[in-house]
Length: 130
Image 1: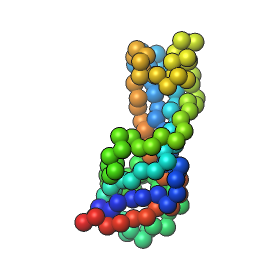
Image 2: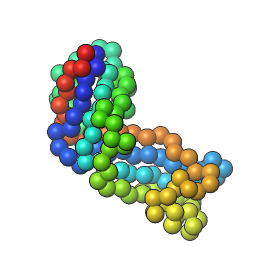
Image 3: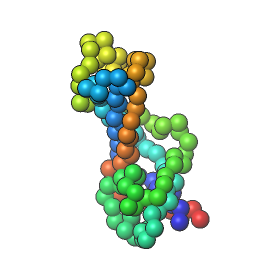
């Protein structure tokens, strides 16, 4: 079954993305973004009852035990970015540090985004779609 998931509060959607270097595995960085508000269409995993989801105080959309899949429902092109920071930057040169902290890591050669997690740090409304 598919549901529309809406956070009950603003500034609660956390997206963490791990970045790495294709050639030098000692280089890494973590991008942390907080979004004001965003909605998702989710499909529940096999055997999950919606009442379990409605009790969650933190909704991890990447938890495959709960959600089979999810997509952005409101097509905001990434949502309304409220806050962004970089954390755990390791093994970088001064030039790379400058570009990373200027939010331009994608302009650096051989840097790629890896694992990303989406967490809603509040309880949510779940509305049946089909």
